[in-house]
Length: 489
Image (cartoon, rainbow, N blue to C red; front, side):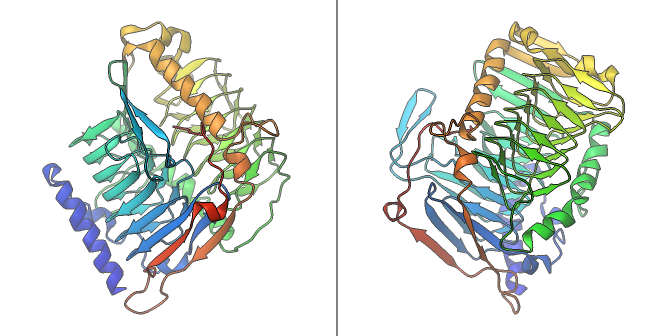
């Protein structure tokens, strides 16, 4: 695996140059993080649909276990069990609006990954960088286990395990484990583990930081070691079931899939599970004894166990819901971890917003009323008062609201409206409101998708690398129908 080792060293060198002002060395985090034989064991695959342009270019890269959809280019990079989901890339001819600018697109947007190492990372949505709206660029970047890169161009960065960069242009930053950043732009910054930052210029700012001792129980990483903690133990306990799902090229659903719904053949479904109309279950989702009401979704890396979602529920990328009942239109943000127990279930009332990277882990019955904002770390009823507020109370805020370790500045009404607007867009984009003819979204489009596999060199100095591959077909030849308004950003 001589050439693969050289490639990894190349990525380390490029990223370290970008992070030199932070004196941050990514090499201890990558050395030996993936056993060499695994780069050959798992195939990569790409999806074909009538709704997305066919264009893939892979050069001098390792792609083990990774998934691609939409226009994607990967050069001089290592992707391990990552999902590169380009089903919401912008189309040629669209007008991209940013602040006071209206920017016409002269080419279809594509995802371009160069000189990067992504481990079990999700890349989704379209770039919100107005300086280069036709290219969703990830360059000179290391992203660790279960990080989310969502609508964020990233250049010269280290993203810790279970971190998320969301709708943010990131340059030369270190983002710690389980940190969440949605700020439009982050340049030359170091974001502490467990730091939650949501900012809209001249509108609002939300911030919260997990206590380091609390966070370390759930996720921790040290140079020279693999990530540890409850999060890793939980996802590792499901690993063998996912490996079985990837061992066969074709499979049949084990449960009924009703009209307008889609269940990825790369999801795992066990026990007595029911999905209703217009439900979207993405690849690498795990459902066990779950009931998903009409219009709900379980996105990539989500887990729903012994839980009931009443309908139009959003479980964003990486969300975990165990022994819980969620009322209609409850939003569960990125990488949130909500766990009740069989004898002490968790209940969340309709219309509530569970902020990205929230932890609720209780061994006593816990009920959160309808229309509440939820954040932080809740492990008992005593914690509830310091980590929840009625959305009505939040919307009344003008100036500053300090509640426990949470600080909200600016307009609370605009903060709540922004979340509600985004929730509606996600439901629309995922096809929750499909009526049989109108409002088609991802759930309906994913019903007709085929997968093609690609494999690496099995031996020799190129072992673990993939050959240079170009796959393309003109849009006109595919008869692709462009659809406006399906944006979950």
